[in-house]
Image 1 (cartoon, one colour):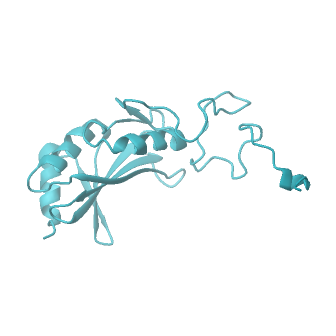
Image 2 (cartoon, helix red, strand yellow):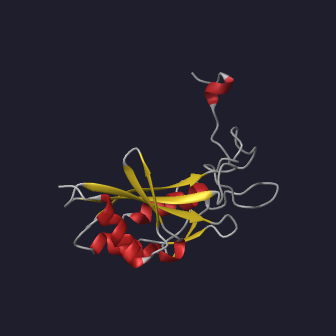
Length: 177
């Protein structure tokens, strides 16, 4: 038995009337403002009518020049009981890049939020251990000293010269034996 979309929408709007909806290819997305994220996601998880008890994935979308605000944080939830999915999209203002952490509701968000911080620079307020995940802690632009985030769309395709020391590549110079 899958959930009807109106039940999901009513549950979310019961917490925050400003929740907007978007449907693409029969997949429902809820647009939630950052200051109401924790309340909405907790209700979707705990409400007996929805029971979205599994955080499947989380990512960030960088729209660069296509939309304002530039970034969206997206959580993908699944209800095991009702075999239904919903997507929560949180628009993030470019100047602040702050969203509340949902690790207190879904512990699996820990890894996802750290990855999003490392790759896009979104700060998850209240995260228990927000630090770089793949890149070194001192991964900064050598000229400006600012942190750089490799999955942003304005990151140079060939990288930033001398921003990351690389191991020697003997195959490049024919030194392989």
